[in-house]
Image (cartoon, rainbow, N blue to C red; front, side):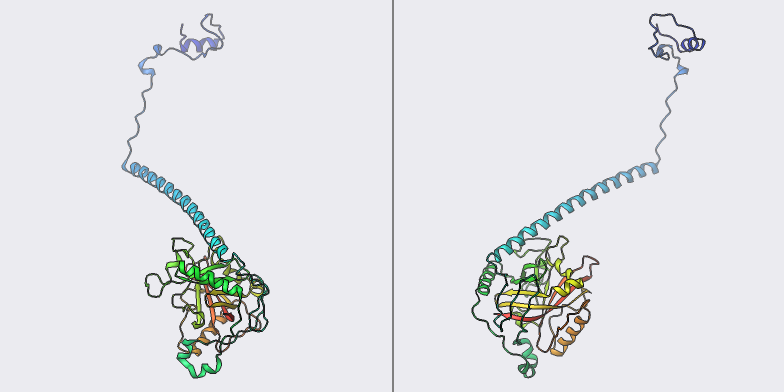
Length: 362
């Protein structure tokens, strides 16, 4: 038997007991047969409201935005993963190059005599002392003012046989045969900077100072790029007024990231030597200026009409330095090195580091 809803309600309200074996206390008192429902007791379903054009546009926009957000998220994840992969590739590639070049302590300078009167290095990452180098001949300067410069410039004192120097030359020559754009090798004391230096051929207009921004020293594509010399500089460093070298400031500490360390006064005071190794010799520089500059401020200038113009240039870049080097002097006939890297801030800012050539081993 199916109990009608009204009968159950009345029985419950009156407290009557329903004497029927099919009814139990566990049964739902409001269960009743659909057969007892009449048409007017069944509510007709409400019709769905018609969607307006605005509703359809809103739905379409929401769908598009969702797809865009998912696309941006997927691209961001891909970009982060790719960046980490590129960082790792660069780390492995340049670590391998350093191991090959430094396999037999090519850059170990402990106790090495300059050949200029007893000066020695302590190590590439600590303070060093050296005698001031003798002035050297520069064909570019002599062409401009030979009479005056002949009185001021002398010949570099040539050291005797140096096993480390010869080993370095041998390795750089081998590297040059494999990678013709090899310019040399740079080591910045107190930092992780120890990399090959490349230089694009001057007659390749579309490479110049752009190619090695996105290519490793091997020539393969690499976002970390390579350390490279300005295409306008001579391969023979002794012919350059201002040898300019570039490199990325990588967030993982690679490449020229260490240049930013010199923005700290304590670091600037305690670390000051940079070595450039080429097949012609070892060139040691002493840092005298560090500052942040716009890319178009002219600090990467490589050519000068005469020595007076060069001195004005040096005075200008020295005056911009955040910190000063006590006892440092730059006189007639001196040459400088400029290292340039981005700040990882506004795209147009660079860190500019300048150093004076103080010693040559060749």
